Image 1 (spheres, rainbow, N blue to C red):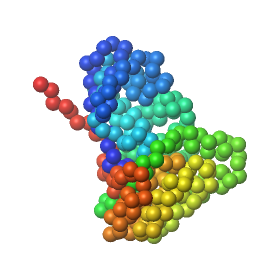
Image 2: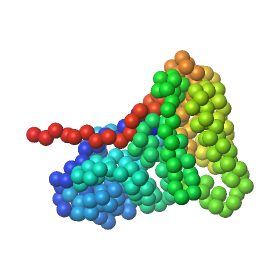
Image 3: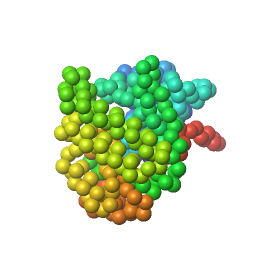
Length: 298
């Protein structure tokens, strides 16, 4: 599900040869050379698409750092989209998604998926089918108001490193750990059930699928649900939420909270009271994906 937590950036080719200049939302500037492409995502994407540099990137907004919302993936897609347009080419999602995915994996030094990249490209609610020969992306037509009334994403304020948690799980699966194999199978089954329930606008079935997913995910590694995160989940449930799960790998970051229509504010109030600096990020799904907006000059 694409969230209305936008990456907003501006890019141009007015810089120095061999240099990528990045200005963050805080106004801090960083200069990158091609040698930085293995350790920084901005440099990796920029030099992959514009090898001679001269790129200037100004970031106005992006997801909170380590919020568990795939912020780096969305940023990578936004930057790749803008730089492709600067080369007077039409962005090709089937090329840019695997490109950004692989560059991100190199920078993070851990494997990554594609779910966050496709959400940034297309927006809305998506089902990603992992099939032999390639992934298939299905757009689910869910009534936006229905979803927004029942789905809240809350930033816990707990920072985490999802890549390391995911790598622990991958290693356990490759080693054939029985608990990991069973839990991943249950997560896949819950995802299929959630897709069907969303298409049928079945509120209770969605909640059931989310609870099953979270129970299985918690068995993957102790770091998935630290005590601080469990406290927030229990606070939300006590206030009326019917399902709570961490976004992404867990360990902190953001929570997806499912609740009956009309109960969202009570749940939010309970989460704010129980958290240390947590806040609501969004409700429901962002309808659209990545888009280009020409910047007037002069």
